Image 1 (spheres, helix red, strand yellow):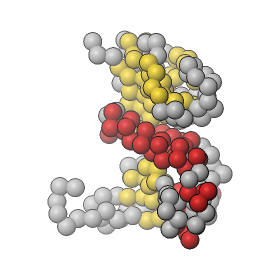
Image 2 (cartoon, one colour):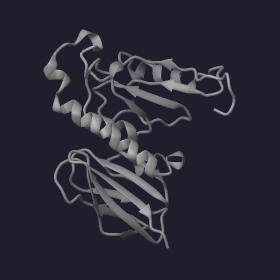
Image 3 (tube, one colour):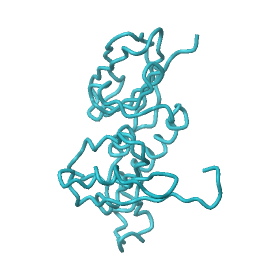
Length: 216
């Protein structure tokens, strides 16, 4: 915002609204009177892949409107790479929904989620995020943010191998792996653009793949 006295306005959709009921299209199509268009879309927990944010609106995806208290680190990456801004309603102090279950507060599931909120933030700052949009068609796992020809960030929820369509890129591309469970980054072997390429992480479990144009 470059002017004072202006605020963002948004609408909220609850997880109980199914896509076939038309709530998400209505949210994204709504024209608000504010200068900044804003959409608060929640996706059902059953939709593990989530909905791609394919419209020019900010989408805040929060655990409160999906589970109440819930989520895991994989949800963070799935949401981020589908173009959403993941938000975690953290039960760390027992103040949420009157939840005083200490075991839940210190759950390893939530600690890993917290860490990966930070990891996605690091990538958001590292990349030219403003130029990147969801491009599920460029990764066989369908979780991919990309500025084709320049940067690609993909998520492998089940590990294994991923095929990336790098047809828009040319020349050498740098490859790096990130382990969302350990927080470790590992350089990979450089690849070239101009076609589809297959990659496999050097560790077990889910993985994040970052491909970027190498400096000449």
